[in-house]
Length: 278
Image 1: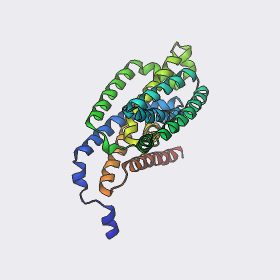
Image 2: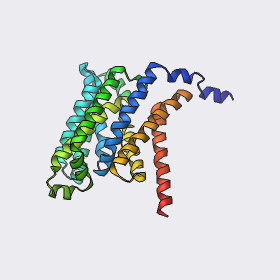
Image 3: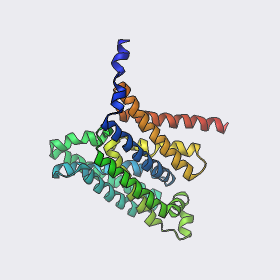
Image 4: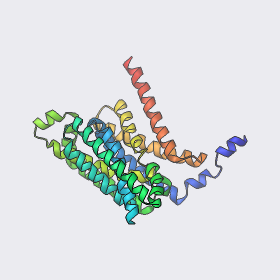
């Protein structure tokens, strides 16, 4: 009983109604929507490594921003976008993207460690960059997340068909006149934006769980691209909100619980798929 009291926080209901928790819930909604939509394209384009690497490519931008006294998100976004444009321009095919991604990632990781060694404040900032802190999201950041989601949906409404076509069958899309190179660069640029808004909440190490895992789960259960995007967003939202509630109840790190819930959904979906295959 004493062990249970140690784990369980009796004040969890008041914690859930706190202003910082409200910001976390709204931020989770925005991140789940963006990650769910782009997660489908990430898997369809065989770019899961690129999506994971973009978060780490932004690391030197974040640590460099600390050195210059600039906002961390600004430095992270600039480097993530720069890396995305380089990868999108050099990697016109999936195999080429892997090579370009690995090369840019190696350089960015080394540069990030170099910047961190130059300043103790940059080194301290690395932990929050790596793991994030959704409970410290501010109201201004929430507004920024919402604006990004609106812009994301507006852009995808315009390029949805060519983006989807080039994702599902690149060779046929190119034969039909779809600008494959432009779609590659645009996809990577949008992913850089998603990474930039999500890293303050979940960090560079855990962003993979929100972009890829819900989308992989949805692809197993859904029957169409649009349904998969919607389901991936819902799974991401349930994972984030469920993680926030459980972290308030048991005083546990929310990022770990969010990733655990997302992974459980994927494991259940794989079980369902195995039963269907029989």
